Image (cartoon, rainbow, N blue to C red; front, side, top):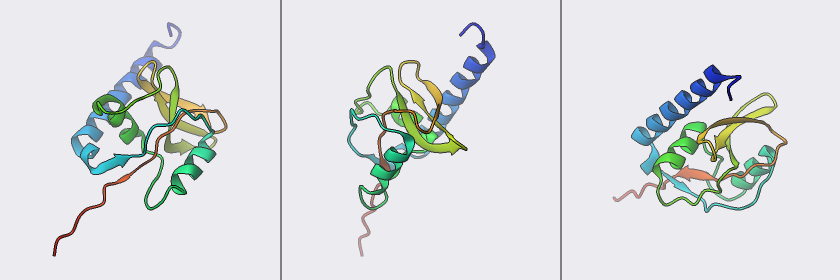
Length: 125
């Protein structure tokens, strides 16, 4: 960590900003599929969420961070990474629960995941 102080500071700052933005705008609008102990690569996690039914996906990085910091009901596995839907080339962004900051892994790494979807709005006519 001493070798990359600006990188670590930047990751912490980005994590905080993304979480605060999400908390202020979206947390009450999504539901979370139960947490799992399973670790899979990004492709498998994305496939599991998409096959779970209507509207389930991996969370955006903002959703993931917001849920980690502001959802007291969640049971996170500690000292691990969680996938988000956010990716660039062969790398995916996620969240490191031990440090509470963004992570960046090769898509074939084995990490934990959750699935989210927008809450179904009840329309009364």
